[in-house]
Image (cartoon, rainbow over all chains, first blue to last red; front, side):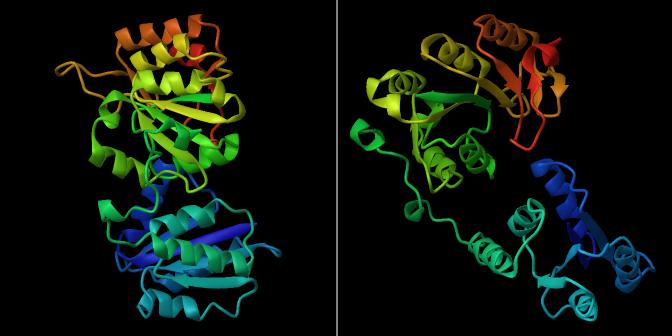
Amino acid sequence: MLKVFLSSHGTMASGIRKSLSILMGECENLTVFDAYIDETSVQQHLDEFYKTVEPGDEVLLCSDLYGGSVNQVMCTYLDRPNTRLVAGVNLIFMMDVLGEVSISDARLDEIIDESREFLRRVDLDKLDTQPSADAESDFF
Amino acid sequence: MIKWVRLDERMIHGQVATKWSRTLGVDRIIVADDIAASNEIMQKSLMMAAPATCKTAIVSVEKGIALCNDPRAAELKILLIVSTPQNLLRVAKEVNGIPQINVGNYGRIAPKNGTEQRHTYTKNLYAYDEEVAILKEILATGIPCNVQTIPDDMPQDLSKVLG
């Protein structure tokens, strides 16, 4: 089963969890930690998290910022079994990932590419999809 | 033919249309709403959430009903979305062969009666008594009606939810 650990500088991680709860309900396989708010460290929370990981589980670590300190700590856990790390996650990435029970490397890369597309300038004249023209011939 | 009629005050938004269109296996989405049909910017912003796999039409309620009842629609699998209980009632009465009505999201953003609050029925269904009366009229048509926001949720019977 896929288990996800998301951490960020401050409350982005728990903020994402709150947004996700509105969009898709509670996610039991998601653990979050808002770093630098209290005196505990990302390592402590990661160590606690890994106690809940069972053989055969897939672990996905998610950080807010590539090159940031949260991500740097997570890098040191990449030698744990079945562990992958994605930096700079956005909301759609979290939604897509949490909807899966298991994710292959190829599928993970696909989700990352698709999620990246969602960071975009909105130009009403250049939409990917136009409404079906009023002409019925187009609809039928 | 019509596969599913959904009441969602936000019409097409987020992943909702994509999830439902995949789950239902539809190839056409009709948003039947007089306001959206007459507002080009609204149409464009709604289309941002439309699935790439499905032709989506944003038309008036009357036109949406006509499209569903058109003989050429017989081989299509249509998801019809309306945004108010009134429009849902009209569709329930005028569209032929509806197998299922789905109450997805209503009452959080719909215009209020002054300062009066809607009653809460589920976390995504809020309604005034007049609106509940309309929903009960819809139940009286005999078409199965459920309350379900996304396909992952457990569907509930509308009659049980309204009490």
